Image (cartoon, rainbow, N blue to C red; front, side):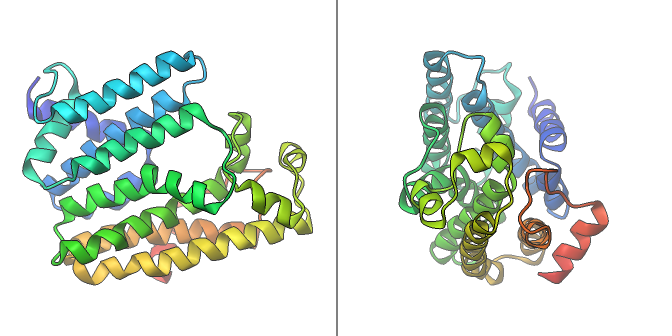
Length: 278
């Protein structure tokens, strides 16, 4: 398979599976846009394996371990696998940390093996693997002026977006048998898993979610320190991601954190307004 064909496929995957992500990377120069799409397609593969409830646990683990082995084998890649062909080319062109890709796999293994997190410390480690790692990998493509300073900001921004993602997807995750909200915080705010199952929007639920939202906003403020370290187009891309997710948080807050009756999402106009408001 030619590299251009592989990139065409990862772009299709990104457009099909991640509209917010695909929308944000449009502002990047073509080479960077293709590389980030390759990173997304690999992350999507890991996530899909971890989420496949029809696969026995040992098969999910085997599939995730195969993803890890593929990372270790880079820059070699199976010639008929467009995701890995594109990933191999992207990681040859940009200094994407191999450890970040392996962290993605580690996060997938967490998803495949556990469904509850005792406290923020445990949840933070999960978020670091599944989203902080994406921030690190993508920032290597953006090419920050000071990589050492950019890395922790990129990771923190990833944590912020994942926290908002967890808030948005509470109902969907429940249907998959997962509760990402920390168990000690559920207990502290007086919210039970029965409340989640029933979709009860109580004052206790709203207080719990506001606590999650304030954490996300603090992480977001810290993570946005990445912007001055990026070129104009890369910074605009990151602003788009951050603005859209902050817009989702604003929408959830405006609904009184009712994430059960319908999944929070922004229209195209809503996304533009959210990015402009950041």
